[in-house]
Amino acid sequence: SAEYPDLRKHNNCMASNLTPAIYAQLCDKTTPSGWTLDQCIQTGVDNPGHPFIKTVGMVAGDEESYEVFASIFDPVIEERHNGYNPRTMKHPTDLDASKIKAGHFDERYVLSSRVRTGRSIRGLSLPPACSRAERREVEKVTAEALAGLTGDLAGKYYRLSEMTEKEQQQLIDDHFLFDKPVSPLLTAAGMARDWPDARGIWHNHEKTFLVWINEEDHTRVISMEKGGNMKRVFERFCRGLKEVERLIQERGWEFMWNERLGYILTCPSNLGTGLRAGVHIKLPLLSKDSRFPKILENLRLQKRGTGGVDTAATGSTFDISNLDRLGRSEVQKEEGSASLISFWK
Image (cartoon, rainbow, N blue to C red; front, side):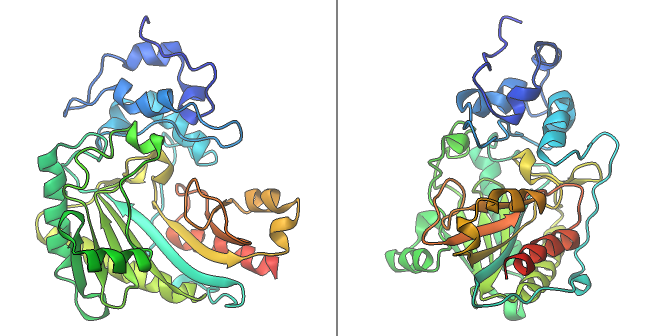
């Protein structure tokens, strides 16, 4: 095809799986809402990737993207999720916090613990593709549902466009606020359009359960607290997430989910549970050990700097989390992060 992109210098999952034949087969197809293959892959064409860090290189514009463009999404998913084959395997979901055995980490090492996931509202386009009206609908549906939370989950919604300076400073101090995406991976995918329209942050009064609305996904749900009590963090996460889902269903909406891919999100790396269980830990000795990257890889864990993706670590404090999100249930993930903590002691 005359339109096939030049991917010779690229190091991302899309580039290593897209062939001229697959491109020719898919380039004229569109999803019911009009999303195309070129729109899925543009971010990966524009951002070749890093010689040592392999990015995904493509995004979905809507739930149907994963079906219509399955010939490229499936191999990308299989590569990114450690051999999970979306054509033959089913993704398990298990939000039963009582099954977690380990989960209280040594506070001398663990500064904070958190679990996060994403959820998308079925029937509305995902952030790379959504119109202003769809984005506002996501905000309305989610904020109304969150207003129904009670007890220790009760809280307040802060719209980015209507925040007072005092509220904004407080959210920055709490490390809750997300900024307009500057990462070319996100901007090339169209996720920063109309910023900050219909974006916001909801959190409970205790500041241990929060929801980001319309950042990289329709919603990001996060349970967190200082210290190492991961079991309590996960218990609150499961309870809060089930409650939010119930409140959304009461309003006649539902989350995007199928048994092949689990919960559907914008980036293929977050499919499945979408679950990232992480700790901010101090690893003065292990981080200087040349085996550190290999140890993480063997445990299927990922390290980031303290500010999250694309950032450096400050001191010897790292953000350590699970790498795979598909093919293993939430409870199985939680156990994986626990094994590193016993290792570094």
